[in-house]
Image (tube, rainbow, N blue to C red; front, side, top):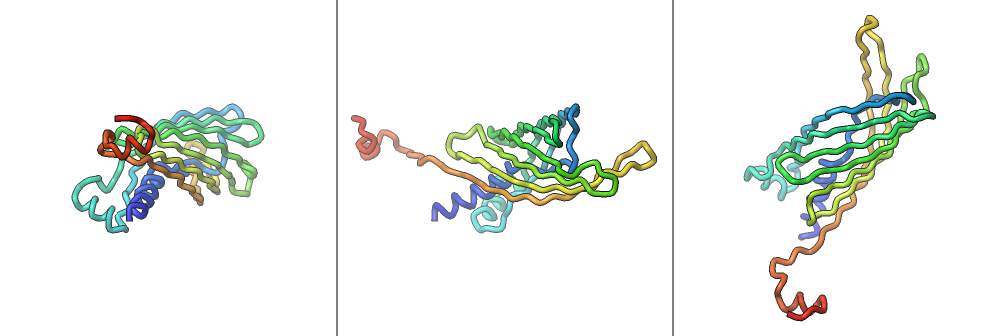
Length: 187
């Protein structure tokens, strides 16, 4: 029963910290640099009974705010390196993320831009839950100039996500004799 609840928690938290697909299919180019502030609202999935009951009780809030600072740097050969720092509001948890994008098709006149990105995020700020995500996503899109002043860049993406989670056993009575004997210490 506890494994089931832990797996549900890990899945929900993994989707919360997963990297977002927030860039069109082309890269910034060799000289391009981007520093951006991003903000996401994530809905906590209430499909299972435990999460639904927690949301109904008012804790946690069914929506989480995730402000982030994102850095992207264009590299030669249609590559791009990125890093993200995200805060999970109303908590003391943060995530650090890195990614590498490759755009084998970009900038051709009629063809849409296509990029592949490998990304990873790691949650920090909690000693009880060790959570890492690894993802691979595919983006396709095309930029269109409108009147020489505005650029429209519709895009879509698909992401495969792997959530790696573990937790340490939390002992509410660390001075209990059984625990002390198991680790070889004397009371």
